[in-house]
Length: 328
Image (cartoon, rainbow, N blue to C red):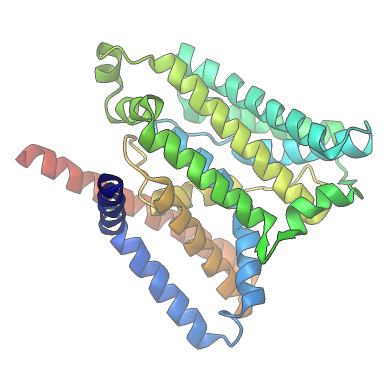
């Protein structure tokens, strides 16, 4: 018991040290917004931020996993839209129960991820190109199945996913907590997770070490597909509809949150806890800009600059790690 407590304390200290910069940035952002706005720290606004961040948080966890193995998935936003449309279609048009519709939608997300993973694992085509192509395929499929129109959902049980609470905690917040725990355990406590970091750190070395690179690559894309489908279900339940144009540009936010949270574009580095901090930095920033009545046009510019800053931050981290390796 004592050894477990020591290990936990050690992990917490390591996490705080690794993410000290972004934690400081988050603290400064919260203090600034609480000064310049009167309602930022109110219970209703904070719960609203949690709901707004929930979809992008789950999406960012999936993006982080593919980045850790040295790949990228640009199709996640289209999987979100298509999954939301499929889930609502299954409930409203096909007459499936909410539970069955959610399960089938998650399986469909796994299929989308598997398609990306198989091509990435068994061909030499870069994941960037593969997922850029499937991004268009999945988005087009969403428009085809809905004829370009939103599908309204009147099922109360489905709507409760996006708007309901268990006690004082929104169901969307509980989904985030579950995803954080599951993905963190996979990355930090399993042989599979260690294999992911090894592949991202040095793919050739991982192959020579006997790690099943193709299998892990496929499974990581499958997990990203499932998390993207979950995001689609969450988003559709929030707005009571499946929308083919939903989540447009969400892949950029997911990448920014992951990289801000310490995940490296070159692979082999990153934690889910750091990604969650990155998500809340972006969420608080968006919320603050809205409360300060900044127009949506300026918000787009700010998001673009944030992505650029995140990539620049990653290059600084990569240079620092390279210097440390050379000294060692």
